Amino acid sequence: MGTTTMAKALNQALRDGIQADGDVVVFGEDVGTLGGVFRITDGLTRDFGEERCFDTPLAESGIVGFAVGMAMAGFRPVVEMQFDAFGYPAFEQVVSHVAKMHNRTKGAVKLPMVIRVPYAGGIGGVEHHCDSSEGYYAHTPGLKVVSPSTPQDAYDLLREAIDDPDPVVFMEPKVLYWSKGELETGSREGVFGQAVVRRPGTDVTLVTYGPQVPTCLKAAEAAAEEGWDVEVVDLRTIVPFDDATVLESVRRTGRCVVVNEAQGFGGVAAEVAARVQERAFHSLAAPVLRVSGFDIPYPAPKLEHTHLPSVDRILDTIARLQWDDAPDERWLGSPTGGAVASGVAASRVAPSRVAPSRVAAGGAA
View 1 (cartoon, rainbow, N blue to C red):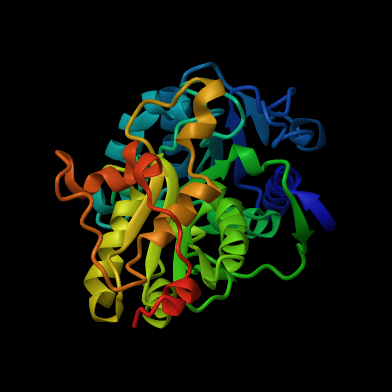
View 2: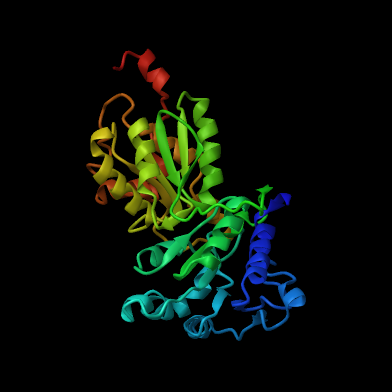
């Protein structure tokens, strides 16, 4: 297809999935005639009929419950939650039935279904429209959780999700719907559970996914100007998690920063940091640090730029990775301890950035 947007790549994946398998059915709020709020399902009802793509009532729990029944009957439902936080009324269905049916029936009943969730911020939306809810799903055994960052990955991962015998929560970064990239639909690769190095580097590894991949790539370019050679690893799938690619990178660079825009406490970034610390401790030259959204409800549109991870916040965090071999003790007197690193105070008190070459010039080992 050449160059296209992520939105069109997702639309093409749904089209190809419907054409490839007569059991694939797409439904949700306004996905039919309107084509979805973000036009991801545009033209599907027109081209394939209402029996393959149809609208539902405004009842997320009912949408997911209906999908469970259809999956049990042999269909492959692909449902849309319209917005991230709109999916919370369906969470009981997801946790109690979608994630557990296979285990509950000792493998006799599979649920090959996809729950599409447009998620995260950066579009000037209000609360209930910009949540980063991936952590809830990733914490639930029995679900696969995916978040693409490019049109090619959006297409490949959605096709894989539709074909997968297990339930997949497909997290679509709204801010990237209109981002452009190359798309080749003829040679699809299985990318579930395979992270990818978006930018090679030797000094520090940035681990991220979905909406923060472009931000990390910009930060890596800016870091190069200050003497840091930054590697960027895009997880692509949160569950299953690709330990091998992440650990190989961190063992080479010796330093790691994990970036996500969800709240810091108990989030996906915390899990990644723990896995790296547990598995690559003796390769680390500094503690694993995080850059995340603040531990607050999603802010008003005019304030979201202060909440979301930024190039400056990432660079300030890289600067704290003990380049001069001195431990960062600024948090010892804080009532919240090291947790401040992922919270509001991080951007206020981060030290001046000092690139490795500048430290070396000053006589550091």
